[in-house]
Image (tube, rainbow, N blue to C red):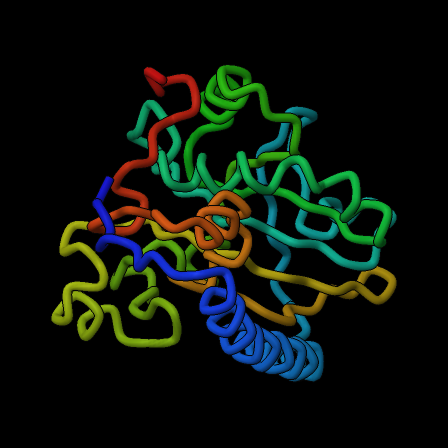
Length: 240
């Protein structure tokens, strides 16, 4: 963890004046966030004509089936390539932060599922190790990861990430040269059996879902990281 600059010691009155100045900025940021959320809800949507199928614990399933009887579906693109023995450490951190709220999502007519390319047997073993309960399916025999640009493969036509050219992102060092699977969230809405893609977010767009980060951002030491998630471990690998 990085050590911050020394804090300024102030009187209560000086602290209160600085806190009120910061509050004005916080309120401005909250209003902007509300505006962005409204703009996000107003985005047009795209009807999905392709039938996406996955391997799940009960056999083959579809994107439509992941909704159950709910109108909305949030999918987390969990980095877990077929050759890996464990899911991504950072994605595991994301899901540790998200899982506790899934019952509340369901109450708001919204389903949730994670999707990875790894074989189902590997997914199930890692899920059991981590003690997770959310639905998690394998897209290994599907175009899903490529069509939503979370598996980078020029041969499969997946050459952009976060709405930019992968080549440009790699030139800037924002995507590792050897990276293939990448994280993100995608959101879908259904009308009967018709499924529509409404939103996807990647890279720093995932930050807002990390309550641990949100809490650390309140503290004087902050996130204390030289690189994003450098300090993160699988939750069963922390020593303190």
